[in-house]
Image (cartoon, rainbow, N blue to C red; front, side):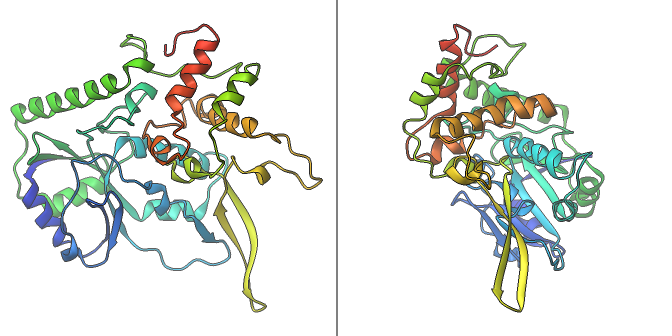
Length: 345
């Protein structure tokens, strides 16, 4: 089911929703949570992904394990492809075949995800060269997507039963897109993808059939490269915290007082010295470059071997947040060139 609508009508519809708590992307580049939909000012649909990732709403920074309050029904608006891909990585971990995290599952089930195409990618974006793209299609993980005929006219396309019901309930009176609307929308998508390739041309080989990074196998012998590339890392953990697909956590015994004893789950960081340290004090990743290397191996080797997809979605957040100005693309380029190989295959 598809509908075409202009921006002002779309905003008007969202302002009149009553059965959701709305989390939307505003012009401060953050997700804003509102209970009263009339408070929505503007939707920053033309911007790239938010500064912080949407995993915050499914895999919370801190979550008490021993209690469960009522779960809000959320409409999560304007999620980009890079974050949808990251959510699929989290799904494989938390609601996979071998293990189900009940809290994560319930948070997901109570969230309607509305995605949107990314038509203005920036220099830090590299989704298209890690197997992604700046637009959303059926099967990518959203319930409904917003794509652009132009900056004012939008196509709404439902991908799931939840999306179909939402579209029918709130947008049924609007027209369906014409063939010409789809042609214009597809042209916008082509331009967006071309921009990303232009921004990343120094990291890619011109081969349209394969758009993935080299799998970083057999790089353990390149210790001197890892040591050099990790020199500027200050181990702040920013790249881990801001990453939409990092999922390491620590379970703690916590308390407010002697009457309130509980366990909670908090985010953990593989760059921190204590992350891999064991009870006897031994640490298999004692040195900084080993922890630095592990993050790349996790993103481009371990997750690919287990789930056939990279755990990096090319969102570029780690590049923007790093105080040492470390660029993941340049690190990978240094490694594969040191092996005498192409940067990408």
